[in-house]
Amino acid sequence: MKNILIADDSFIMRNWLKKLLKNDDIKFYEASNGKMALDTIEKEDIGLVILDLLMPEYDGFYFLDSIKGKNIYKNIIVLSADIQDTTKEKVLSYNVKAFLNKPPKEDELNKIINEVFL
Image (tube, rainbow, N blue to C red; front, side):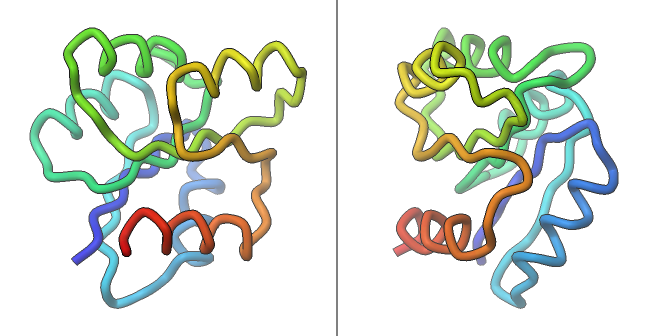
């Protein structure tokens, strides 16, 4: 079973991603903010996090800083509508698997997910 956490404050985006990635071999966890995402990865065996940068409570950068500070390694795909080079460079400095523009292309997302779980 592949455990994927979708951390995005948009209910519509979370549901869209679940439909896009629907597979009997995937168990989805959801978080509508960064605090919920941190709580989930500390309690569950999550293989991949799909992370939005702009969320309430704790944003994506706070989430990335927190797991780095706790030495928690997770496979992470960051999704963002912010396509500035400085944002992308900062995100990639966290050694994430990918930085994808919102909404992600299905083939790009599936390729990365398959690489993570192979």
